[in-house]
Image (tube, rainbow, N blue to C red; front, side):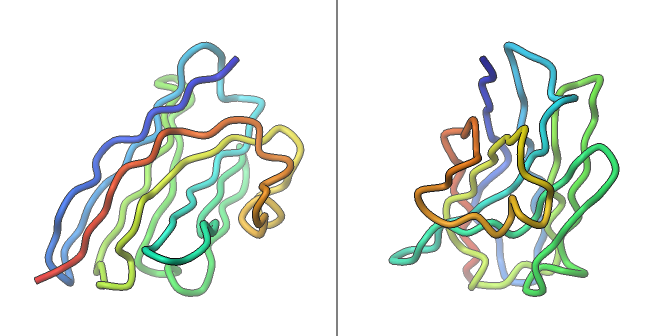
Length: 128
C-alpha cells in the first residue's frame, strides 16, 4: 500500500512560482511512475507531467514552465512551477502507476484505470 501526500500549494500572482511535493509512505516509489494531474474549476481532471526512473513527460501547455523531478531516497516527487498563469489554477493531485508509461499515464482520463494510488490534492490559485 502506498500513501501519497501533496503539499506546497497556495496563492501566487501571475508570473510567480510554486514548488509542489508528492511524498510517499508505506512503500518505495522505485517501482512506480508518478504523475501530476490537475482539475480546474468546472473541468475534468487531466494529467500534465509524469515521470519514470528514466523519462519525463510534459504536455505542451506546461512545457518550459514546469519541471518534474524525483528523489528516490526521500520517496518524493517534486513539481517546480514557474511563470504561473491564471489558467494553471486548480487542485493538483499526484498519482502512482506500476503499469503505464509516462506518456500513457499523463493521457489517462476518467475513470483513470491504471492509476493505483492518488493523493488528496493541494489547491493552487494564480491570481492578482
